[in-house]
Amino acid sequence: MKVGVIGVGSMGQNHARVLADLGELAAVADPDAKAGGAVANRHSVSYFPDYKALLKDRVDAVTICVPTNLHYAVAMDAIAAGKHVLVEKPICGTVRDAQRLVKAAREAGLILGAGHVERHNPVVESAKRYLEAGTWGDLITAGARRVSNFPERIRDVGVIMDLAIHDIDVLRYLVGKRVSSVFAVGGRQKHEAFEDHATILLSFANGVHGYVEANWLTPMKVRRLSLTCLRNFVELDYTAQSMTISSSSLGPLDPANLYQLPLDFDIRHVNLRKEEPLKRELKDFLRAVTDGKDPLVTGEDAVETLRVVEAAIESQRSGKVTALP
Image 1 (spheres, one colour):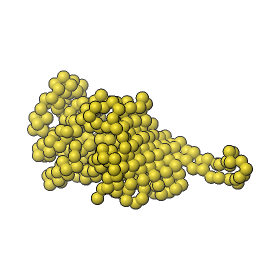
Image 2 (tube, helix red, strand yellow):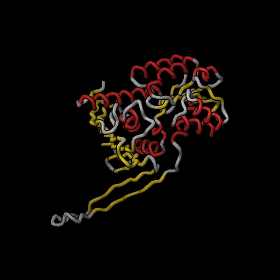
Image 3 (cartoon, one colour):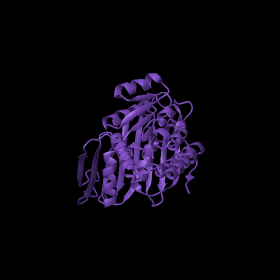
Image 4 (tube, one colour):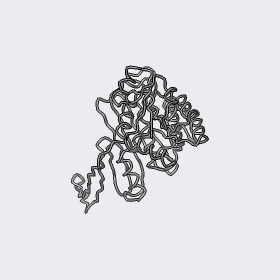
């Protein structure tokens, strides 16, 4: 298969690297000749300053890594050219555009995937399996923390659309039910145009609750998710790709000494075999194209995540709970 990468900023360069490692990279496109030419030379593939020229080339599929406000136009052009498409998250800047994109891909009989990379993290895959098997008991609440310094590469969206979207998508995937309402608080500390910190509360249709903390203000990179279940408390580390599964039992209690509680703890640390989530994502997309089946994150799935993100942004601006139909 021949795959082109459109946009070789930070994420696009990683797409190009992984696709080259897989032996599938055919070309890259970027209006910045210096950046695009450097990536093309590094991987010995064709370079196009205009992505429309790449679409006329003999590529079977493209991954789109341009700024969010260009996702819709570039992806629609790729679909019109008959190319299978993987669009980096968010799939589009608005739900309305995303729905149009999904409709166009379905009508053309083309694969449309979305780059929600954390879905492909081994710890998320493992947690999904344990939850579905009921090993940890029913899920009650889930909480995610995704904080770090401000990324200079981000210019066109706020922290909810850039960072919190990852965990909103993961929570939707793990809970397996629709989000019924969203309440978000946050604001601006350093970013002039968009929110740079937010805390988001999600209510799901099955009674599960989740929260996401995201900011660009913390001098420490944290990527963690905790799951409170009836049998276990589970902590996932996205970066280390590890899980800590805990439970405890209470022995005979002395009511005169509540300081020294007779607790027995069962704590297990699980280190999974480390795999690059982006490589798993791109391999999943290539399999979908080859087999004619849906990728793990379909266009429709990405629309639903974007719907929740839009609701969170609206809630943060209005200070009110946003209900989702």
